[in-house]
Amino acid sequence: MSRIAHLSDLHFGREQPELVAALHRQLHRLRPDLVAISGDLTQRARPRELAAAADFVAALPTPVLVVPGNHDIPGVTPRRFFGRWHAWRRHFPYDLEPEVHGEGFSAIGANSVRAWGPYLDWSRGRLRAEQIRRLAARIAAIPDARLRILVAHHPLLTTPAGAHRGEVGGASDALSALARAELDLALGGHVHLAYVGIREGVLIAHAGTGVSDRLVGESNGFNVIEGDRRALEIRHWYWSGADFAPGACRSFRRATDGWREQPAGC
Image (tube, rainbow, N blue to C red; front, side):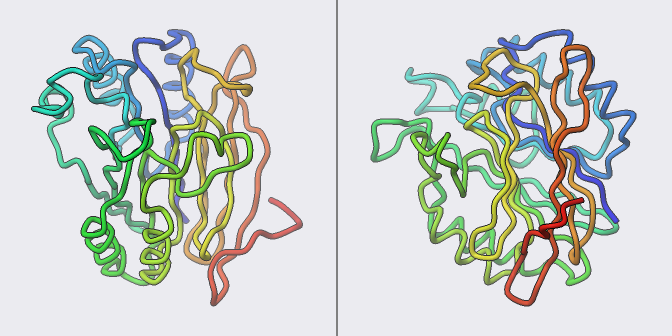
């Protein structure tokens, strides 16, 4: 059985120091097999924000898988279009689509950040056709016994509360291809809301903002996922005002046609 801690939208530059310290303490107590961070580590991709985010990541339990979010590249300046990853790579000098393998899981990162898009909201992100084919091939190559995890910033699934933000471009094509590759779990962020759903048989979990003050109707938090390819439990941990505390838990089992929620819960 594997334990995955899923954080998102830390937004260093708008972080709350008390929560940063508490999150570190709680993650070291939980001792996860993987810490997955699904983007927006900074608020404006400023050097001091990237340095603070890198220091935070360096102090986490290992291994850690990090993908960028739309806030992790410069705003609408020439640097956004020419060299947008220069500052990021100084502090996170590894692949933009990294992978981490453990005894019971394999996790692959997807970079959904784009400098611009054919829509007014350039923060929305997109997965390109060739990128989807490449990710699906990497997922399909994971040994059958391992839990197959994808980590991306932008949502492959929205709820009514976050629907105005839009799904990532290419979401439908991506989910169809990833489902055929037998992806188990997709982790994301962007909308600052914690939720879990199933689409195309793939289990999708989003985390809210981990430590920032950019709240949209719910407290800071993160997810803890435990289990294997047969059964998973997803519990949301939330900021209680004094520490991070365990909240609601949902249970899922994998059937021949994908994941299904268990009505009895955890």
